[in-house]
Length: 284
Image (cartoon, rainbow, N blue to C red):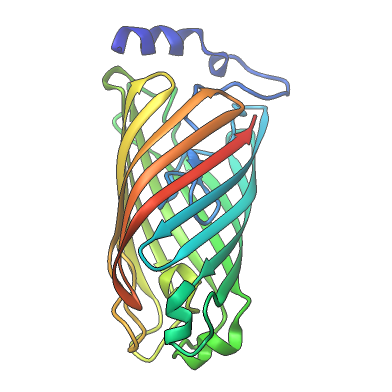
């Protein structure tokens, strides 16, 4: 595996100076689209820029994701564009179906929360692919501005606002010889359940949270990994728990990928929410 990856890196067009175009990155090195739209894992962003454009190039993705847990369904879709392997823009729309829980809460069966997320990410330092001899990771700064479309309801359950902006700093190190990627993210957020239940609350308004990812390349096209994400606990109506998942991402080529995961979301008003995460991504 190590020899194959080293040979692939040496032959990769990412080593060349590209005047334009797309497709200069290695497979999976842009990550997939996380649930809020940024390039990374399913739950947490990476410092890597999404899309397959390397230096002097551009790339873009369109994606759709479903998370089906014991009591809820979260559907999300969006688009992402990366430029010069330096800057990333993204948009995501989320729809959170409360199913029978909505009726129990007096909202009506199948009541749906909706949220729009506009994101941007800037690579500040390093190159996770090319700088294999460096001990330092690639570092990126990102923002995600979120607007919940159910303002009256989220305020009724105790949220302070229906919009907020997350700011995060991600560090990603790729060990090609070991077929291993490691990522850590520090996020400042006021979001309740990533914004689905609004922002701020009766028990707090904003905190720093930690996120992490690890992925092992089983082959050039297949990655196995795990993630975790801590979250603020600001609403008195229900505790909010750490999220984690175990995922398998398959990219047969630069234009298509599928990610399947088992997710554990803990308490989301109702306790012990776990289930299946499926995401499909198309792009270049």
